[in-house]
Figure 1: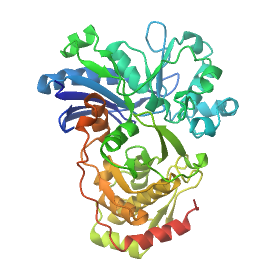
Figure 2: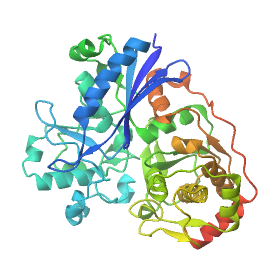
Figure 3: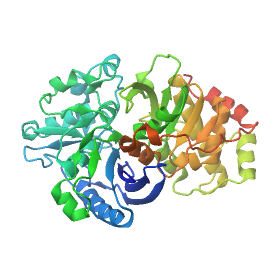
Figure 4: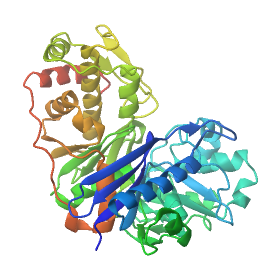
Length: 455
């Protein structure tokens, strides 16, 4: 019987290992490590060797303390591993925020499929996985020949654990340009990049890749029969418990470095690729209209590391004085791409409660625009750090006119990834009640919306 599931969760900011109780998806333990990008040549890359050492040690310790019966994996998107014929990395795992792929953007644009085929908008830096491959092959002319296998990021960790090669539909469906969501197949770009025989087969997230390798069992103390699931993109991990336990229509806002709004049972609206809307693919293989912006990054940049909880007087002053932050703090992504941030009427001091409140309102209003762009209807469930930000939640409820439900638990991604092991029997809506909707917030939201570019 499966009692405890170890969830490997590699986010853009932190790498985590969580122990999740199978019966109720409660998180019993979480250990983390910063996901520090390595600046060494040939380009900024993720410290996969450091993560691997951390994960092996954490698996050993948490198995000793709790017992681990299965392993599931979730990671951020826009990431893949290029493996040589011996199964080693043929090149470091590129950080998608590196600007290198923009050097070959024109040549890549000439071969990438249209938005109508992939539901994948053209994004800057390396946020389109296809653009990463194109740039890497252009700058290292022998790389394509050295690459024998390509696996998406969750499956890289699954490969290290089991030796099995795969990709998964949620990672491929995360603005890669490599997948056709409506047809559940690889896009025409795969052949154009010359990787059709190299990219690993696409599997469902809940598929079992295999059991841990004997060497892994020896190092960690895990039973040799410990199963490892294929894995899932992190925002889709946050979405999965709600797909399995809620009746549509509803939306889930997964928050972290990225804020991803995903609508289930949405009203039919045309998606605008220029405003960072896209088609994600759920763990069930279904297309999901989505929109995103770097909400966690914007939060940190706007507050400059000085978060002071606002008092009621701070919030009242922000509302009455129309203290507003306008988009975009990170102008390369989101529904206000290309626009530069500004304060009205004046910038509150760093380290003040008024600044914290105004930034929370800003993030809620950008989230509202994301939801509007994808035809959101019904309740809104907020996952991740913003689920504990009451000013954000209250403004989101006021601006949308919809119930906003903060999801309980430290990492919604871990609960979703654990469901790949348990199946729907463990899925249940156990969230807090909807937040109260203050009556004076809606007018502020309307004034803010009147001052930003229209939909």
